[in-house]
Amino acid sequence: MFTLSLKAMLGSTVAFAAIATATAGELPNPLNDTDYLDNGTPEPALVELGRMLFFDPILSGNRNISCGTCHDPGRGTGDGVPLSIGEGGEGFGAERRTGSGGVTGRVPRNAQPLYNIGARSYRAFFHDGRLEPDPAGVFKSGFWSPAREHLPEGLVSPLAAQAMFPVLSPVEMAGQKGENPVATAVAEDRPTDAWDLLADRLSELAEYREMFRDAFGTSEISFVQAANALAAFQAVAFRSNGSPFEQTLRDGAFGRLSDDVWSGVNLFYGRAGCDSCHSGPLLTDHSFHAIAMPQTGPGKGHGADTSYWRASGFMDRLEDEGRFRITFEKEDLFAFRTPSLLNVALTGPWGHSGAFDTLEAVVRHHLEPEVSLNGYRGKALPELDAVIEQTGKGSRLIFRPMNPARRNAYNRRDSWVQSNKHLTKRIADANDLAAVDLSDREVGQLVAFLEALTDPAMQDRQDLIPVRVPSRLPPQPPPHKGK
Ligand code: HEC
Ligand code: HEC
Image (cartoon, rainbow, N blue to C red; front, side, top):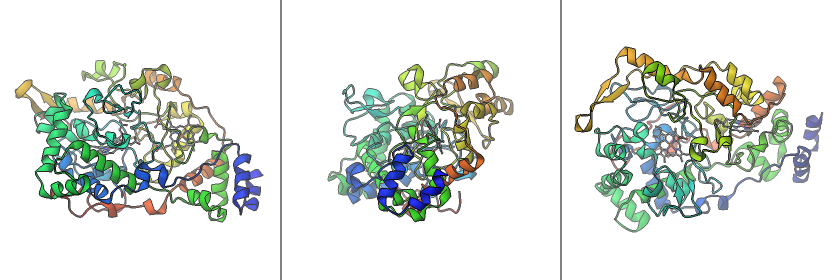
């Protein structure tokens, strides 16, 4: 009843404010320039340098993958798959496979979208927030991070600090020990050497030397500068405040939103309680919650359970305990950072490991988290058909393809957590999200609202991908149609 009368009231900001109070929750103010790093206008030379670096495979140990491979502006700034196949893979998006050379494993979590990642309100980065500012000054860099005291000074924002890390991940960008000097430095816990080696690579190219000089006024190239440039680019390129919902918040022209969307707004900020976590202009509280999200794939390998290890002979523990592995606080068990919902319709599959293929499914999960977890039947990930493993020691390190029997045992890790009652019970027991009773029609209205959070200008930003990059390697990803 209430929702129907809404439409009649619409037409002025005053009426709009009345709706906000009536729905109990607070409607956010849309973001403007000053809410972004560099007040939304970093130096163009810095942005252009960042753009080249973002799509240039030169930052990967084996020169075979770029940031853009997993954060493709034509695929919702992700790669459209639950879990990325990193360096060594071949193909793009849903077609990406292990390739003839093979890979050592999957990237354990869903590639995060980068929309509005330059908003100052982002403080803790990654699904588990393992990189965040360190106001107490424990580390000279000013950040808590996996590199601890090794992280250098001079990083201008947490977003810049984040860019120091993908290049250190063997499975994402660096590669395996012995394959290239960057990967070897990473494997030997010498991150500073890895960053210096990458900076040296850039220094060898006249075009990069010139671009760094334009951006920083010096011909000394450091990886910290590269990271600052990557941050400047991401902040500008993926800034997005043009969804119909935000336009309406800005100009009060309510007529552009359908009845279903309005009913969705009312549910979201009202009875469904979504805004208790998805609050503020980005529809996230930037905080961490356990919502019994199912896990697909092998996880971070940092849990406590040894069942897979005992059954398979692989020394791995598979459950992804999320924020708990950073804080070791019990309430953070299986908690992940609340995602922003701006452009959420473009960023599937959804959940920290890409467990759900449709928006409707992930919304329904929220309504009955534990029932959904227990009923979740998993999903088929593209098989890792060429898995390589390391044998030998020191300089006698060799990589060889797994034999079929071992590979079968290895591939079972993809569904292990979800098919293990003890583990799913631990995930369910940690749940913090209360069940909500909504009709099918109301679920449809919430989905209609989520779709009204899509900025038409962000549907496809492949125009950001340069035709050529200074290394002369093929920029990644190549032009494409569809996901
Ligand atoms: C192989 C795929 C892959 C590549 C290559 C890659 N990323 Fe990511 N990115 C991910 C995944 C997966 C996550 C989430 C990781 C986690 O939470 O553990 C992520 C997270 C991020 C985040 C954090 C977003 C947030 O909301 O906290 C940023 C920013 C980012 N990546 C930027 C980059 C940049 C810059 C590069 C290149 C230097 C890069 N990525 C290369 C897959 C990739
Ligand atoms: C208790 C806090 C909380 C509440 C309340 C909540 N969410 Fe979420 N939501 C989260 C967290 C945390 C995640 C990510 C969980 C994960 O991946 O493990 C999430 C994920 C999502 C996603 C997937 C986004 C993505 O990028 O993967 C959507 C869509 C979503 N929520 C919509 C809603 C809607 C609609 C409601 C109201 C019915 C709602 N949420 C209520 C915390 C919450």
